[in-house]
Amino acid sequence: MTTDDTAGKGLGRPLEVRRLDCTPELEAVLARYIEIQHEEKRLAQEKALLRDTLIANVSSEPSVLWYAMLAGQRVSVRHTSSVHVDYNEQLLQQRLGERYLSILKPDIWKVRRNLSLVEPHLQPVLLLVGSPDRDKVREAITGGIARQDEFAGAFEKSMKHMIVVSAKPAR
Image (tube, rainbow, N blue to C red):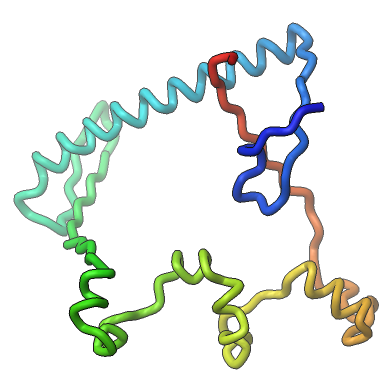
């Protein structure tokens, strides 16, 4: 058994790294999977170029729904545009000082990144923004806050699978 410092990054737990003994069938599945990943990347690049060409041809009138007839099929093209602004937050905070707070609104990505710091402050509004958490349910049952029978029929349990396949040159 070997471990890999990068394995499981972002999953909140270290993963054990083991060599998979491939049968010819599994080797073919993995090879095809990697082949499809490369094809998806190539298709995404091609799609981006096609999207840019479409935008160049319909951008004269933003927020219009265009359509074309192709081989007897109606194909719709919707184009909208909006302004995106990236602020230099450090510079603005430095320049505005305390006034910087007056231009901020919650950023869901920053809330996620800093959830452990933010969570205690969300307590007054958890009924609006919260959902039951599996670990907290367990703690409530073991801590005597709730009984297990109170959860009967109040949830559905299913197995969700995630698989990540990546190809890297052998070391």
